[in-house]
Image 1 (cartoon, rainbow, N blue to C red):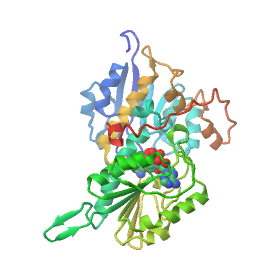
Image 2: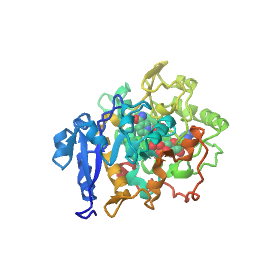
Image 3: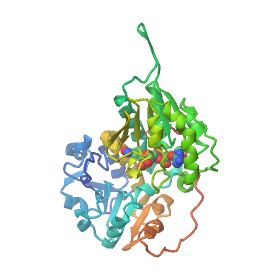
Image 4: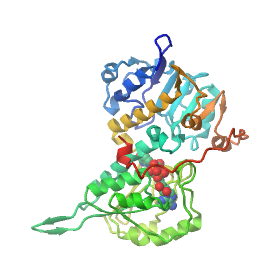
Length: 414
Ligand code: NAD
């Protein structure tokens, strides 16, 4: 807790500049927690409008409303999408030595942006780098936003499907429930399973991680067993490791029957920091009934389906393949609320005796930093930029598995 003589730490929240973004990096609900921890908030006028949070809702909770320049004059700037989605963002000129920037960066997809931020002397924290450990769950924006996306993907599919989801027994006969297949049972996948079950569908799911079986079954779905010899375990940071091309081919052969029998498929398979595994081929989709719907959540990482185009819907013999982008942006009230809570928890870890301590002994903070002291300090990003790797200070501590067993995505999202 800050004492009264310590200067307050100012956090600036700019209006998001990425096209179509409706979220805001902090919702008013997160303000009291930050104020109590020693932060003052300045928010760009109108930054919360598209998320359903007008300026007055921030002002009522003690935030100052200002211009974009006021916001970038803060000690810390928080954005949903750091520097929009563009290495040439006009905001780069607003960065300065020592300014702390926090948000989603996509550092491996945008290494040049990371370098451009480093050149300004700003300290950049990429929230995607927060480890997937039990302790870090409350700061994990990928999890909170994926839970929202999994929910919305199912609603989207249900809306497009020319069938109902639940079993219905009526005087005019019985309607069979829709068959929904979820590929990848991580956070988004488990959220999708829970939503499809609530709507009354028959749900099947598959994941390469054997640990996913129990999680799938606990939500009332059937786990599709594919006799793949993959030796899959969680890799570093609680993520799966990549399958070989040969294993993916085998996976496709074994999965074709389940795909053909499904009315709806939601694909969410990913290995963090890599392009999405292409699991469902156009040929497999041609085996599905006309009117079936696929929502590919991995569209922005290249897609889990061969014909996926990010941001577009492709028709394959009457099967709709929807390459969704930014689904959390379609539910901005709650997506922003969860994002803001993650941010508030993250910033709280950096405060020691009322001041920011960049050297705080905390793995969440230290694993998330990507630029500091005018340099790119993450070795994977350095590799993408062909920079000489920095010496690793100490080997990363072994990561416990994600805590999905004890906490459902809905619980984690609270
Ligand atoms: P996650 O890491 O929690 O889950 C991904 C799952 O895929 C893991 O359980 C992993 O074991 C599994 N997997 C990896 N390779 C596989 C394979 N070959 N076959 C089957 N399963 C495999 O990730 P998440 O947070 O749930 O996100 C899932 C995807 O959704 C990501 O691509 C993410 O970027 C995307 N996403 C999209 C939006 C959007 O709006 N479009 C929003 C949030 C997340």
